[in-house]
Length: 231
Length: 116
Image (cartoon, rainbow over all chains, first blue to last red; front, side, top):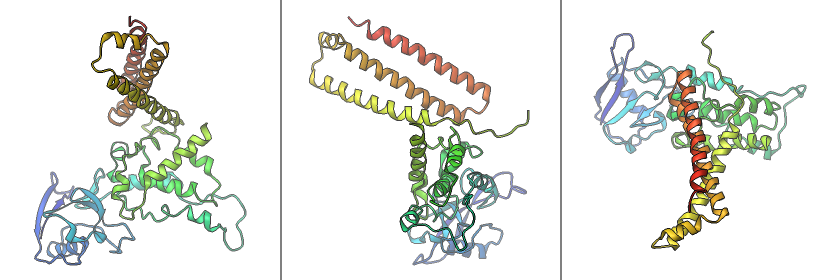
């Protein structure tokens, strides 16, 4: 199988280039990450991030044949050759397939991704009804792999000001949490032409999410709540 | 002035709403116009002129055009926000668009009420 992999070492290379690798393997049940690790065994200078290798940690997010995804849960057999691997788009490249996600994490931090509740701490836990808990389904599963935000043109143009689909999904995760008491502050924080309204619902985030989540719907819910408090 | 990233303008909902409402107005008017054109084939100037003698048609046409201008304003501003980074140039571009759209609105009134 033929692979074309983006190579760039900012310290030594004047500009990025694509390097070809060939593997004599049968795709079978292999995932893309397995093949990348075989390539890395051949050429140890190739830099790539991975950890859990089962779609839970989100480390090996990359651009696979033009589409963001997790290498560890992408079946090799479904990919067209040559398989082109590039780093997540729009982010500064640290080396090869490894990008600097500082901007992404900064946006995540800006939505205060933790429960805000001023009530005295209960002895055991803050209870939720099963129905309230259900509200969090499709939101809490996000692993912050950055596939969605880095496939979003609005995030490419304004990564410093637009929260991005991942951050907004998480923002709604806390707005939707019955135990959180900071809804008004959270909405204030998002009511901004850049932070929230750069989203034009083109749904590339939904298209690429390896966990099958729907940031566009969450963003729609936030807009709905803003509308509710406006009219 | 330090070069800080500033957000927190606390607006945006209204523009978002305007874009949606104006889209609905334009869609309805388009259906009406398409219906009229399909039922008046071949179209003669007399039919066209007769249609616009009605004050209701003139007003709905004006509503359609104003919706178009408001919609265009939100869209143009979005484009400037994404692609025009220098604040001065962006402001000038936005002012130019606003002034043109206001002029178009006045012109629209003149055209609609000028049809004989």
